Image (cartoon, rainbow, N blue to C red; front, side):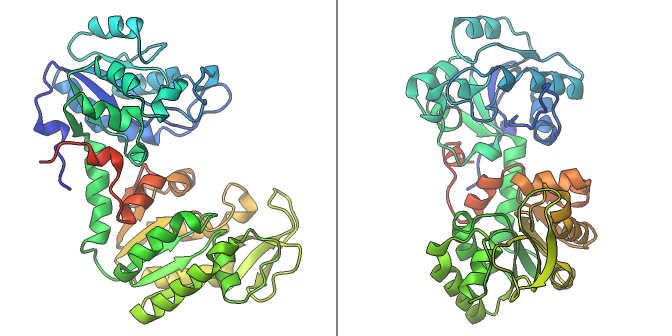
Length: 394
């Protein structure tokens, strides 16, 4: 669906409510440890500044459960944005109500405020119409630039679009164009590498994408379910037993379509998924009882690398091991380096995968790093994202 963007409407000197995704990681003292999502919204914000719009940013942060949680206030995000654009950004202490309306009424052309964490109100996630109206009263136009939240039917995502002209921001436009290109006519060979813990959340993606790819590489915790479906013992690794038949049939479908389905050949297994835990490399038919899969090992890394080196397009979602523990991060790190050196279109599917490539320092070596894990998966499943559906068509 081609949607109107912020460049298709008159925003000059208008009050513009912009839904951004400033759900950024912070340490205990409120220091932002990864500002990728803030940086991703800069093109839209800078465009609005140049148009002398009066900019009202809004976002959620984490899951405060409908109450004020001091360490989940958005002031650090306002401070970081101010540093990036070299312009004051006022952090308001609420997101609706008379004080907020008064602050917005005093904005001058080009000024920016950031509303307080939307999820301090239960009405946000409930898509409450009154809450949506209170937000919409602040502005003349609504711009959605929060791709990472577009799969949520929340008040600030879909509710306000009932009361204001609603268009896409430049980040959201880029996300949709890039990811939709994968289900269109990507350069081939096209490989999809999927990791992470749970199979169930990705089966829709795998079912939808299988006829469109040349190869499918499976790693991470979800590999345990695939391996068990083929009769391998996986120790005490987490297995989704209710999905065993589904993944077995997925393998049969891959064969019928001529899609190469690569599973691990060897694994790093551990007695506990903790730093310093006893670990060893085993083949997939030798996982000991009482041990669990923690990462892919050298033969698998070699096989996956060989497959990817022949590709022109690669989409990757989900770490290939317990990446947050250094001794179980080799698979993820190794394959990230392979992708970084490919002469191919390499797209990272947001979430923990994006965090991994940023931490490794390879984000700028990828063709595109999405800001939305769950949203990118749902889009590639063929689902219409609620936050996109409500925007004006071109």
